[in-house]
Structure formats: C-alpha cells, structure tokens
Length: 156
Ligand code: SME
Image (tube, rainbow, N blue to C red; front, side, top):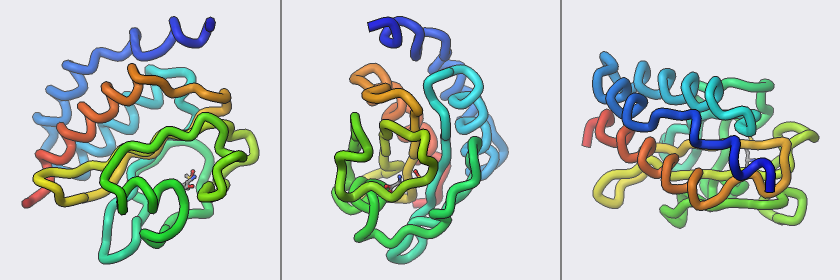
C-alpha cells in the first residue's frame, strides 16, 4: 500500500520526545506534540489532545478543523472508550464504529491513545485521517511513545 511508506518515517520521534521533555510546562509540551505530528505526517488530518476533567474529556490544543466535540463524557465516543479502557483504539472505518462521534465528514479513520502514568489517565492524543485505515502498528507505537513522554509532564 502506497500510504504505508510515506508515514512516520519523516517524524523524528526522539527529537519530539526531547522537545516534550524540555518544554516549560505540560501545556507547551502538548502544543509542541500537536504541531509536530500535524506538520510532519500528511495522513494526520486532525491532531488534538483531550484532557480528562472529572468524568469528561475536554479538548485542549488541536490542529485541523474546529470540532463540535469540545467536551466528551467518558461513556461516549471512541475517545471516551479509549480513556475508559485505558487502551489505544484504532478505527479503520469510523463510519462502521457505532461509538464514533463525527468531527468532519471527510474523516475515514481514527486513532486514540491514552496519556497515562501508573494507571492514571491524564488525557489522550486523538488523530483523525481522511484516509481509510490510515493507522497501523507504526503509528500506535510512535503515538504511545509520545503519550508516555507527555504523561511525564503532568503532576502525579
Ligand atoms: N471522533 C471522536 C470525537 C472527537 S473528534 O474526532 C475530534 C470520537 O468518536 O470520540
């Protein structure tokens, strides 16, 4: 598949993790992560971070079209499922996933990666693509590494 070869290769994950660790605070670290992921990975159409506040996920830094889902209860959406299950979720075809909350009609696939440390969820990285099945093992491993780096920046 053509799209398999033009992905994470262009992103220097170690450089991103260094920048996350060096950022002045968690907000700056999140903005750096969103900017770098969106800028360097063409199949990442929308990149955002939701933060867990009580029993809802609140939209933080993002790049892409404005989303109507600025506050997602933990029992709703693919976002709510990933945070509740404390596990990465990949939807190859969002329209076939009954949990899916639509952000843009162009979106075809999605990956949601919890930002957590010692079992505590602080938030999650959410990436949408306008390509079907855009996210594979390479994206999962890379984004879980970025999420780990971000988790270190939150107060325990
Ligand atoms: N699709 C997500 C909602 C967030 S928007 O994609 C930005 C979901 O199903 O939870």
